[in-house]
Amino acid sequence: MRPIAIFDIDGTIFRSSLVIQLFTKLVRRKIFSPSVLARVRSFEVKWLNRQGHYDDYINELVQVYHRSIVGKKRSEIIRASREVVREQKYRTYRYTRKLLADLRRKYFTICISGSPLEVVREYNRFLKFDKIYGSELGVDERGRYTGVALHLPSHYKKEVIVRYVTAHHLSMRDSIGVGDTESDIGFLELVDNPIAFNPNTTLA
Image (cartoon, rainbow, N blue to C red; front, side, top):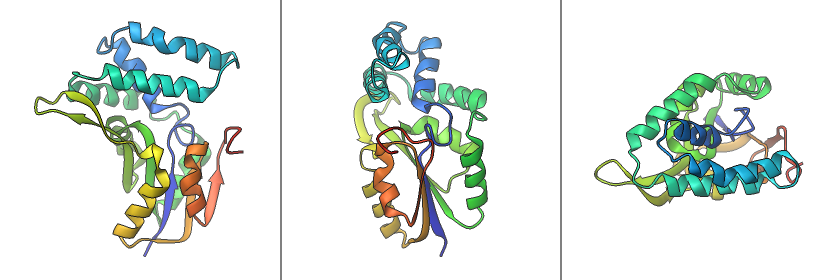
């Protein structure tokens, strides 16, 4: 039985945020109105100027993303996700990318991200995790987003991992977890070998 290795992606492997890059791509492709960029820009500027928090910025962006995606075609989001990954897949931290490559030989690897499942799935064609989790939004019979959140694993990462490990009879012995923010604490507390990589102030 292989031990498990759990990774966050944004800020842990990828040197940015997949949801930020996808959001920006959708605006540039005019799938999202340019006006939505202005809604999050003020939060970004405050964060960059150290007058606001990154969490406020990313939370606002995610909320705007969820509102803006209603009625959009899933095929368009997948196409944009592929472009983001093609252009930025090598923008990784060397340490965690090498760690993942080394662990893949003996570990069952899991990534759990708050970014949209569409872009996480495309990125995984490059990263090759055994199991992936990302935020999943509902799609109607026409292939358009409804705005209903089906699965937001970043809100309860510990529970997601426990459920998967139990259902598939995996072992936590010698397990490894790698994360960078307090949202990763849940699974970092579960594993035998937690790694806080490039942690934010709260996790540090």
